[in-house]
Length: 557
Image (cartoon, rainbow, N blue to C red; front, side, top):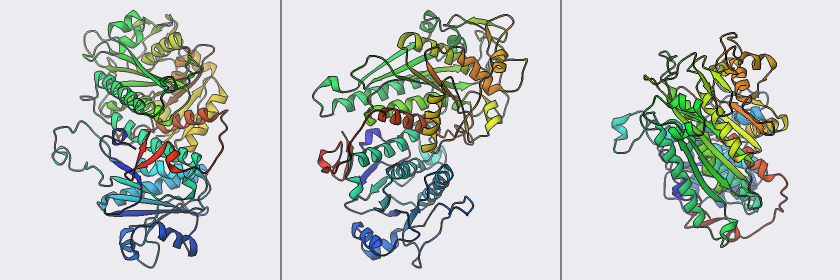
């Protein structure tokens, strides 16, 4: 992939097929077997450009998924009688527990490899690994595991002086050994997806972890514009002569007083106290030339910093609130990958961006504000602000674009963490088949979701005695995640299929953004794009594929 699409700070700079080896390299051998033996190992050696003596020096450690009767644990140890001989992955059944164990193993080995100042990783898949989804999963996890978080703007700063413990990974190259299975259309598609899923997660983390003094509302709009322009430029370099066949990319921004003109009073109230104007950023991807309608909208909550407003957050809860924009970062990370995945769909990715600050213009508890939909909302708590931004954004998008499916992602409630813990996101929906598709997509990429209910009691809890609704109920202190879902649900149109993902827990790991949710949504869109398509798997020359080799580095056309 061209460097313009690679992670800004800390990930692979090149991804290529192997033809030379001049750097210090670790070798990952992906196999179903306990030990590579006989013909399979000899076949592997023939593909390896190193001499046997060099090869013995290059491998670092082994890692594997535990067997069925073993406890879930990462094993980093040498595999053969020759120390540091090679590195391997043992694949077991493709179920959720084994997939989770594999992720931990890959994370463990990448952490070890990064500490050894290696320059490259080489991956060889045994021909016995015919499950393309397993290959995709491995590639995606290697990419997303080769990451050290960005914690701010490093431009003009010495990283050593900025923070000694934050150093970019030295592993700059990922090399893939070519085999017979890769020489197929469907295999190449899976390979591309694995790369893009890993990169999308890392990109989302980069933006999410950028601190609020840098990642202002203006920054978020500028980053969206940058992604839109880069996507347009990349599409202009494609070989398709018919411009109508290429996806159409555009962007719309509604900000500041224009939010009031569009009757998004709730949204404006949340961000009205900040010098950085609140804004709704809408990125549009039209990949289906046969339809003018948008099938999907991916909407993210983008609070660049959440003080809590007049209901000020206390110390211990305030410090990580630069991550309250994570849902918007998810939406941005998804959009950045759509054209590269060549999805034949029309998709909106939107960000409801604001800073919940405090001054004399701040909205107050007890205020009653009229939403774009016309519902009056009593402010029960200014720290329940994300739902206010989302519902006005949801109404505007449904009014103007009428998407068939609306998926929102938000670090919305601590109550969801109380219910499910810090590693699982809550999912609520008005359409079970849609929810089932999203849950299935999350399992395939090892991002844990769990369905939460929206019942009559939750809907009653967000009603008000003096307005249509309240953003925070004082009558019932329990069930906060489902109450927030009930509030959002009130603004979903009758014909709109909707899923709400409360990612407050898994999006934040020790005040570091994880990128949680981006892979799930991208995988869901990939699966939706596949529905109704029938493609034959055929052997084709490499030069006829969309993914071609140029100077040993893969370039995406």
